[in-house]
Length: 170
Image (tube, rainbow, N blue to C red; front, side, top):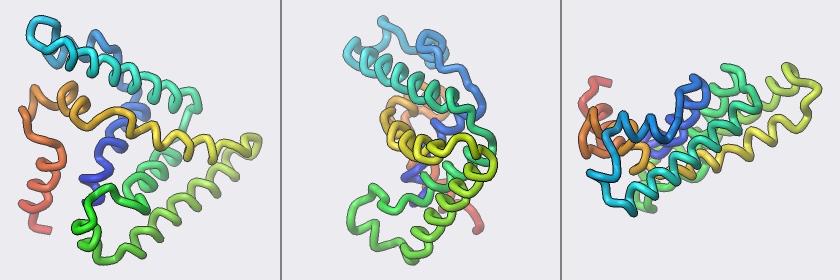
């Protein structure tokens, strides 16, 4: 459930980390969407969210995060203290305290790392944490439509992750 809840943020962090191009025209062309085959209201929404994605990625790139910072941020978003699932699903977290402790540890690790690696940037830790909510500004449906629909069809990523987990021998 943690991965199902965090996949969108992890995906956007991956785009920022690996400098994947997020040009709206290119993404629309590659995904096969255009004014001829997509409702104009839906297309406008997708274009708006691609622009939001571009802004979020640009903000991360401006700070020039290194691999350790990205790794810590990925841990922080994965081990969110308050998952967005419904109340009944929250009860299925067997060890919520351990999950919260993992997020705390990731935050402490990031803070310590930044303090050591970037001593002249005392606000860097706060700036990075303040960027995290922006990762959720792009809807899962837009990410699925633009990046995955041609590959997996109309299957939601959360369903794909759940099926992969359930089919594993872990």
